[in-house]
Amino acid sequence: MVERKRGNGEGSKPRQRPNGRWEARYTDARGQRRSIYGATRKEVAGKLTQAMATKDDVPEFEPTTITVREFFGQYDEVARDTMKRRSLETYRDITRKHLLPALGSIKLHELDRERVQRMYSRKRDAGLSPARIRRIHGVLSSALNMAVRWRYIERNVCREVTPPRVPAPEIRPLSKDEAKRLLAAAATDRYEGLIVLGLTSGARWGELTGLCWSDLDLYRKVMRVQRSLIKGKGGYSFDTPKTRGSRRSVGLTMRAVEALMRHRERQYASGHQVEGDTLVFTNTAGNPVNHSHFRRNHFKPLLERAGLPDTTFHAATRHTCCCILLLEKVNPKSVALQMGWSSVGFMLENYARFLPHWNDGGAMDAALA
Figure 1 (spheres, rainbow, N blue to C red):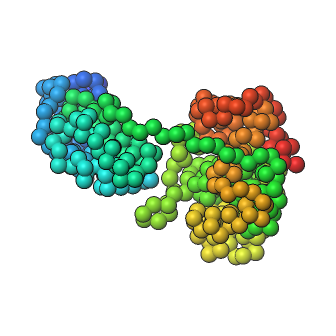
Figure 2: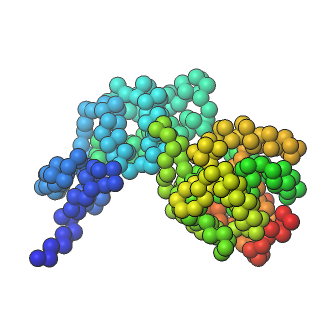
């Protein structure tokens, strides 16, 4: 028997999410898509039936007496099903440390611009940076958008609040000469492959440290970025790349291929696996590379040996790669794709002083020859 396809407005069949919980979706009276969550299929099916029976009777706005704390308790159910691990940890940390102590006892419908603005001012007086306060603002605004969708409140008061301005970070990439000195100094380091690949591909730290040998095709000179390694409160785990455009294939330079081959030989000689779904870059124990340990014990000494100013791995590799490619007049769309950015405008906004034009794919090898 062929199951009848559900019509518009009837809601979707309950489905089990990867985390084991169940979800069903339906369209409310205002044409907005809403989700229902539960621990079992039966629970979600019951909630869906009730919601569908009353969806046309729901008013435009439902006054509620719940507090901000009670609302965040409900919102957390959605957040844990929709946010990536790192985003969820950040949201919960900000909610616990900042939002609930300052606003938790207030009735949700009584939350106004003055209260939120005063909270930001107190946070600034307590020494929080503008960037941190804007992060708090972003978490609160996102949550209140959901409160508006649920008709708990009429408007999002965060739209009426002015968070502190965050100065744009100063980009300090390495020059071509400095990049060559960094590569020369890294030639004898056990993390030579990580540094060379980072500088020549522009991949992010999490993308590099989450790379598996099966993601590399050294014969065809291709690297497939399919995941990112993140460190959270529960240890290391893999997550999907940062944005939709971050899942990509990147052409490898000959310099990177040679460095990776040397790295593979060193890993093999040390007794580590160098094939399949094992990590390409590990510490001496075969575990994921810890960023703080790497920076303190390897990268900073490497900068000193090369006679380079103190900088971050991100600036010395990703920023430098992007700038060199643009200076070598590689098409900006090609550069954006390699960096994993879906918008060329985002890149040009940060690197407006460069006026690139099309060039061949060997620009990086030529620049660092």
